[in-house]
Image (cartoon, rainbow, N blue to C red; front, side):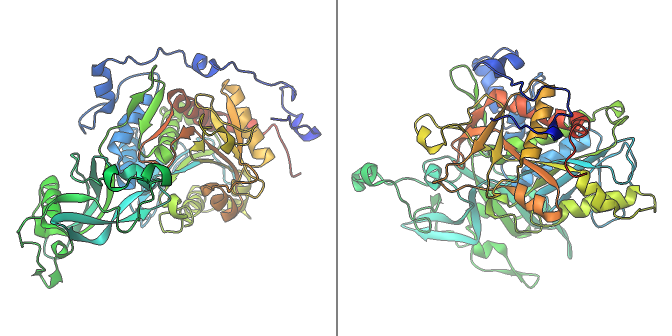
Length: 523
């Protein structure tokens, strides 16, 4: 990257011409833990989906990430697991519908729709107008979701109607061992209902491919499934059971009329309830293969939903660990925040998405509550102008078989640190100022960074960064962990990059205030 020169950046103590040169192995040298053993006992522990299993104690957060991924089959489960970890770390749960009573040094969080979460820790030295330091990510991933009416039968097979969510690589969903997870609404008495999460750990669904003998040209013409007619998972051989016929109970149509009785029975067994108590379902189709380490040296992570649960977990863990003791917040003037949104993969336009004012409403409430009934002129606006947002979403690592898909000088590699995303047309919110400041944080902790810009002859994806940046005018940098197989049912990234991202995010919370003072732009 060309050095940014100009009088305004000479205010920091480092020479602007100094560049950090790393050998290909430098990222590993920063974290000298030996590679994980390839013994089966270790691998089984990493791949465990037993809800009673405990994360391995280690200086690396990778085993804990695998634990998180294996418990987070859906955006609901990812939020519930984040909630569990925050409560265990001493954070207090708030309710958006109730009054808040916040204190400097306090740690808090709330959820919305059980698929969006905002957590924050208030510095002990906070004064009205002091900034928020925020890392934002998203909990959703491309997947198949069940339609409102799922029961379908073809050629004596019980099939499940699904709809595509996001821009997935749908051909990767064929010939996988699939199941369902999500949430249900249960009848909990005569006039009350309860929200429950459900995850069926065993494979109950499969989308089989057509034999090559019946599609001889598939390798030449490409596999182009029709997403409406070819993507229905098989559930079972159809039985003669007629229990799924429409029934009414308490004047309401039973949900069983829309779904196969076998599917409803599987759900009721999982929830230990009567089938008739299930009044509505909101389920994703999920791959049952657990997340694990892979590669000849166990240097890779193989998993579904890395985009964007890897970013979500690194951000969450960085917040928790950056304020695990009261001393961590004793001298801080800022408010440290994590915001995890749903529905990024479909544009963020929902009540639980980044397009909703959730985060900024929370920030305004926090400022007002901590003001102790005194709010000076433009307090919230001054807060936003001093604040900084890190939009964390996975990045496109260069593919060795398709190197020409990347611009020659912007080819992010796995195991080389966080990728700073740039786009002149504002598909990413990074600017020269925000990228400089965020890289300065990395330099303090000797953490490498990379740069990405899309080719001019290719389209560019986007993130929640521009949505949030333009929402109230908060300074924003877009960054991410380099990965391959993005939006596949099974993705991969570098193990060392997880620890680098975690340390960079934790360093952001701990040191950004001092870095931000080095540079003045508008004065």
